[in-house]
Length: 353
Ligand code: CUA
Image 1 (tube, rainbow, N blue to C red):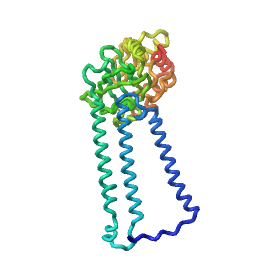
Image 2 (image 1 turned 60 degrees about the horizontal axis):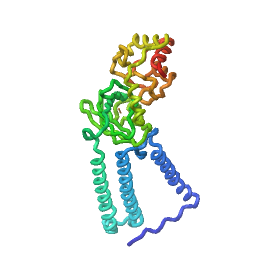
Image 3 (image 1 turned 180 degrees about the vertical axis):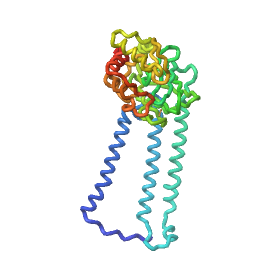
Image 4 (image 1 turned 60 degrees about the vertical axis):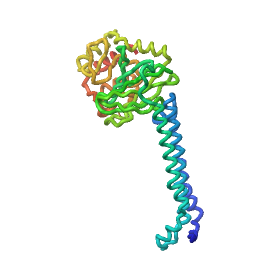
């Protein structure tokens, strides 16, 4: 077997700088991976599991990582062998081909990837079968409807008048049947800590199961590119102890209390006079618009514009004043309001805070 003579070693300094570069890359890559695995993207992680379904999805991920790792090591091994046994420059290609160890090629190039891919295929199929999306009739405690809009989530509790947006309250340790619809384009409902992604297709309701093994807040995110503000189509799933959830739902089902102060009354007038009610509903008032989120009990929500900004009086004011600066491309028009009208509107929407 003809071996290549080794190249003269480069000076020590050059070697060190050559070694440092891959090491720095390795450290940076490991750091990025650690951030992704530990924190997820802004507080959500598929590996921080809170249901049997998400647990099985996480297991599948580790299986696939192991399989991919074995194939990667095999491929790198082949590369190393190829490098060590590279032919002499000028040797005819046919002579070089003869030097290839067929056993190595068959093992690492064919057998190993084949076994790994078949194993992943089998495990993935078992996982998909095990986390069936549509829960069996009667196996869930309640049904909640979620409707995707560009770019917010409408949440309805059938059997009650309660309608909210971007905050999906559920009782913890309870199987919930979630019916998924879309009002415009294809969205995808995804709460990684609780279950897999399920598409929301216009005209074709889908179903999924939500179950949270403990009370907490689980971040959800639209997982299908649905337009310019797709990235700002997030939600909070708030899993509460069942008694607390029932209290929340009863409160949410109540219509909005009438404005109590002069400022709030002026705000209600501004809401009606500036066309807000043609897009938004506030239950208990003549506002019955369905284009934008239902604003009943808006003050109880933690965020505005599907988790784009926190729901504080100052941010609410900024949002009404210049919605296109806060969330460019969204469907909320900018309405020219006087300073006094803006203050009154915020007081009205925040009544009860
Ligand atoms: Cu809705 Cu992406």
